[in-house]
Image (cartoon, rainbow, N blue to C red; front, side):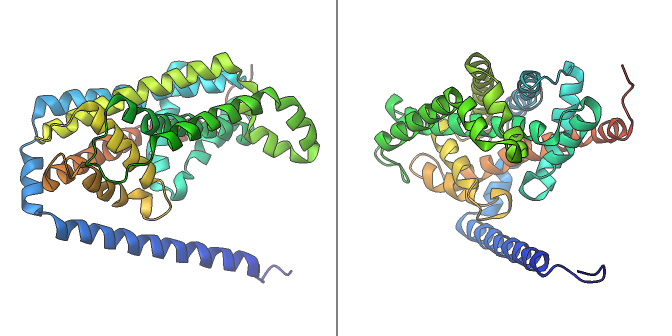
Length: 328
């Protein structure tokens, strides 16, 4: 192929990506318009304007603790398990700068910049750095599925709730996921031997799953549970700030289901699907305007505000990324 020619496969791939983006954008607009037609937007705006400031301030404090402090400690420990040791200040910088990068890039691909940072500053291969992010996502998924499976046993779900899944299925699925992960760790040497040298990059991409032992995984999952617990208390306070008072267990169950639904590749960043799912799930327990006001506040306080705060760290992050670290 000459320099002036374009790869036809690359062209088809880019056209396919644009088409998927356009479909997702159209679905996002349709869902948002549907939500706007379903509720009284003036009432939603009034509820937001009357949000209780002290409750909101406490919720924002919990947001900072979970999204910045706990998540930075968790990432730092995961990287230490891969032989990459960061001080807390640098781990906090990495966590803070990754939040806006993940939010504004397609499929959260901005995390690649964090991986390049770790490669340049700490000589950690990009694939190994990404394995720590995959491990974080896996722990989050297990925690969400576990909540959805176990909270009904604690009486979080009433007979009036919609979109409920038989608890037995979810418990069995969670048990199978944990059993599969345990079996995979036990057989890791055999699996890696079968992959051979040609699969070195793939081996590095799952290195956090193989190299961090059960004790380390339990510590990381405990931090995941702590951060998630802080987040759901934060969400509870955000709902209360706009006058929506729900039991914490019911709120946790409904939002966990909504978050899982929002991760389906339907709309841009899950916008609209998360709110629509919450409206359906909480319909027996609260008015639609209050639910939508709470979800709007949640989006602003838990996603947009951390991204804005994290953006303040980007100049220092990129400055350190450009500089070659001193040789020891």
